[in-house]
Image 1 (cartoon, one colour):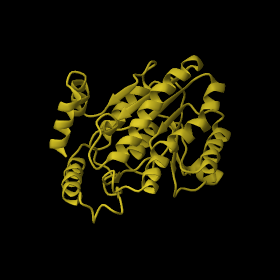
Image 2 (tube, rainbow, N blue to C red):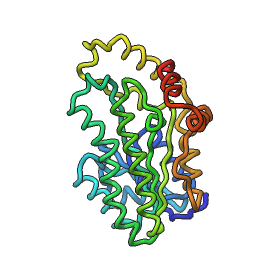
Image 3 (tube, rainbow, N blue to C red):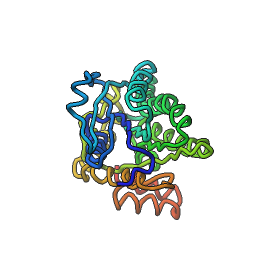
Image 4 (spheres, helix red, strand yellow):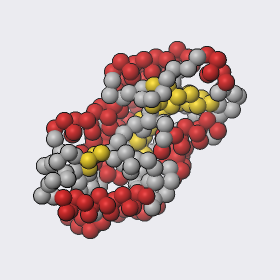
Length: 278
């Protein structure tokens, strides 16, 4: 791979799924990858050296994107070790299922605190470094749910809609500073995300339970039968290899087609199709 932006990569949510697969792929191609996880710990110099070689490495460090202090500490650690941060991949996130009516404000905030505000915290911490460098690449991991809202996934969809909007605005804001911004929109992908999905506490005794159960069952079946994270990694690699990356890249042929067709069909028809799917 061409190291257009540099070789130091910081990836949030890199302990499993898309984040882990991306970290492993980039390390194999000679990048110095700092992955983050809430369960990781800061290693000693000897441990770091043992995992490093001329072809790149993966170094896991602790980071909770919901904590300002944790974000600042992790970003400072990478910057002190390397002197620069070239690529930031905002991947940390989770999903909560439930109807709008059954989702409490606290549950809705928890969803946004990780998926949206977590990304925002990372941007605020890394952007001063990239502006000083005069270059950099930011990749925000969104979702097709940020383009097509999914019933009983309203808060997850809304959090990804927010990421989409912020990413587009950020791309324009950072253009004068030589920093590129893009996002990838995964479709149904076979990862641990499915088993880690949370459910609104009021969902099980809800008037929506019949419809909620049918929708979530269909969605989880599609996820478990979907392709592995390699399809998303392929799109992330394409962004990294581009001097002028697109605003967004959708992973998976069927979803690429769906996003393309959305331009030509009325919203009512799109909602009809999605309601039939879920």
